[in-house]
Image 1 (cartoon, rainbow, N blue to C red):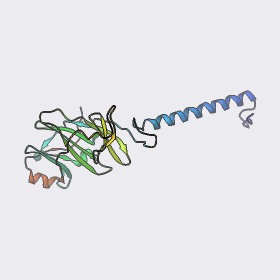
Image 2 (cartoon, rainbow, N blue to C red):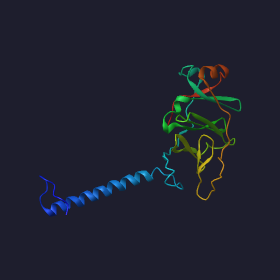
Image 3 (tube, rainbow, N blue to C red):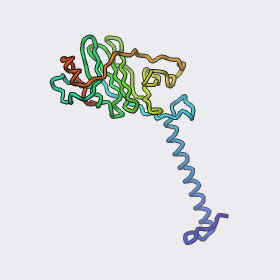
Image 4 (cartoon, helix red, strand yellow):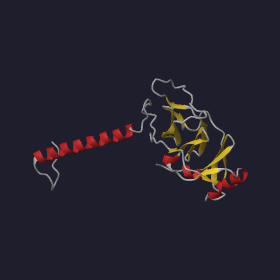
Length: 207
């Protein structure tokens, strides 16, 4: 029989009741711990491959301003693309918020996605077919300091596009569904002088 707690419980029934309550509380804490951990394991991965699944749609078709209305400093870094002769810059600082790492844009009639992971300092751009809708790319999560992106139903490493987790019914060798698009990482002042007709995405915009 458990020893009574001095000064608190002196009867055997009360001691048994307290012991049972403590056992139930311990079980609930353990269940909560394992439940929280399970939410960080991607479907289809083993328990040794724990990753943070933080899914978010990112920024869709952001607002941009012409170069002469931009208020950022010339030394700020941007990610620049040129689509069918039309330049557009994306302020690097606009990607720092975890919910804004991915921008699904359309330039002219060409879907363009720009993605940046500040932890790995890795930026990439992807393109779709002319006349198409914004690409189906969103944030999937984080593992080992690397961003995981979700694209067309599958999960991929942002850095090199390797499959991270297959989509249901799809083998692990599935290729990233969108081709890379040329992009430059420049100072805003240099880019603006070289491309005076550029516009700029400067801050995240949401509905």
